Image (spheres, rainbow, N blue to C red):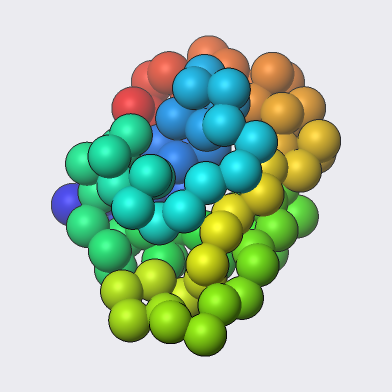
Length: 89
């Protein structure tokens, strides 16, 4: 298990490289192999950085969100820091 920031970068990398502008927690789990808690913490971190936006849902048993939307800032951050992200993942 990595740090919250590492998990956030793994999620961001998977969404950008997988051309996923929107994804559910289960889709992120399939792309990253992270656990539910790691995904929740990583998404919280990305949201605080304004790189993703979450859509709330009524059934949030495993995840704190229904869907995650990749913001344009997330793509820019990824492109500006691609070498650093590759080192983490």
